[in-house]
Length: 456
Ligand code: F0G
Image: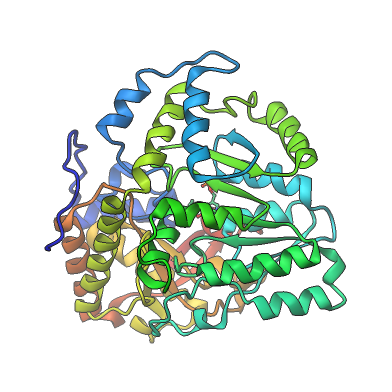
């Protein structure tokens, strides 16, 4: 059966068509940092898949029924009912986005000197651990480090390494084990159910809370169905529920798999922990029945949570990501294999061997994609993950120099992705023409969002 996209555009947004001259000027004004570009200068925006998706006509219709009463609004109960279908925790608290959920839950679980172990902490997740004076330690499975292998579950956590930490001198300081599904910082790769079962057994044996960072819970479930023996005939809902049930709690941005522009939740079983989180949410986000979200958003989320677990939607998402990866390969650009769902990660280090990590090849490719095609995306390499001294010189590089082309949900069609492939092919024809970069402003934390750079 050929693939059939299960939706069509109902409303469209025009995108700017810019000249190279305009883009050179815009990039200059942005300090050569794509995060500083005004979006009206961006033609294809692959910076993030977060809150950037298109809503369905059903979501729009539900939004009209948004009940904005302060406490116990009808919209809250519809949202909670939809969330409970997927997430089997006793306590579910809405908050405005994922990082708020992280801040609230981690403040209740961690403090100075504690350690959070993860397959990979996402950047805001790491920041929310570190701002408490705790340590965020990444222990991804070794398979992640072979970008070219087709191992199906490169997002796994290294259970043996976690056991070693728990058995060693740092063991008593471990405050949580956090498994990110899918592993965004690790190439958008999925975590297998076998891995989740194993880490769950270990965490429970040692009495350490196991928390999921479940921003892409439906996409992880889909990749489990596609790749893990024993799950082929399961539904995405069944797999997602099983994953949540293996943990003691979760934080999840719903700007991804909630198919809405904002929202997140904190889910826990422990009554006392829930109580502490609730106080924090009421003090800083909003009353426990809206958590900073409008009734309209709660309605959009309730409907989005039902749409996101349909096999037709997830199969389409897989198809789109594979199509973009294939365009990159045809352009002569390698990507992390196998491709996940929420983005395609380009191997910029391999494409631009004339640039050393200190010249930020990933950042150089991201800037080239904008300059040559108005395409915006983000570096995941030494600019983001490397260690720099006060003058902005690289002292320790990232393991890889990557660029993430994130795919907003239900937004771009094949013609847009084909265009990205053509622009990439143009760059790949003369890679040595892509200049390296140096840092001109180097903020000490969350550098990639705030730095300014200049071409060499
Ligand atoms: N955890 C993961 C795995 C994420 O990917 C994100 C956001 C967050 C937490 C934070 O959620 O944005 O709602 O506060 N990721 C976006 C991205 C920003 O582009 O990957 P948030």
